[in-house]
Amino acid sequence: MSKIVIVDENDEVIGSEDKEIAFQKGLIRRIVRIFVFNSKGELFLQRRSSNKDTYPNTWDQSAGGHVDEGETYEEAARRELKEELGVNTHTLERITKFYKEQEFKRMILKEFSTLFTTVFNGDIMPNKKELSGGKWFDLKRVEKMLKENPKEFPPGFIEAFNRYLIMKKRLSSN
Image (cartoon, rainbow, N blue to C red; front, top):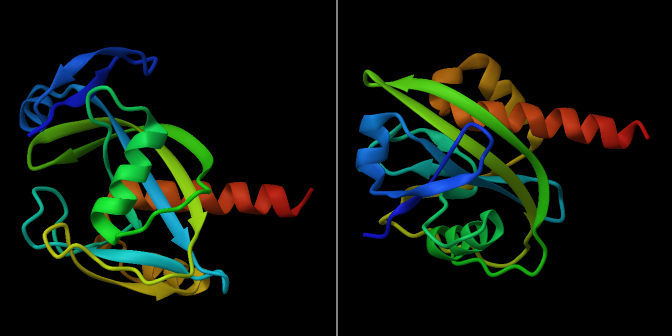
């Protein structure tokens, strides 16, 4: 298993570590989150596998994961899209980057997340080792689901989705 990038509070690389050790030690990790949209403006959400260490069986971003040792955020995003959904895309748009700490099973998870978006109209082939499936959703439906049952989503997704909506509103008002 490859090591993941470890960073300081300024998102500067300070080393690498095994994922489990990084979790146990509360080290700051780099995460990529990718929202895949189709030409109708629908967002593909994955259903996390029941085998996942964190937030199993929840709805999550289209694809995502840790930045591995030697990778940039964008390289990790492209790798995760291919691994999880079988998607190769030429266009990845960086939307935002944010820091988040969350408690999970008596551990403090610390991460810098970079959110990317892409538009893809081809066939999505979910990797059953990574996720249990997925579905296209209208954004209003996702907002409704978040209000009605926020526990169905990991906190990192909620943060990324809310930041995406803010950026989208900002851009549409210009």
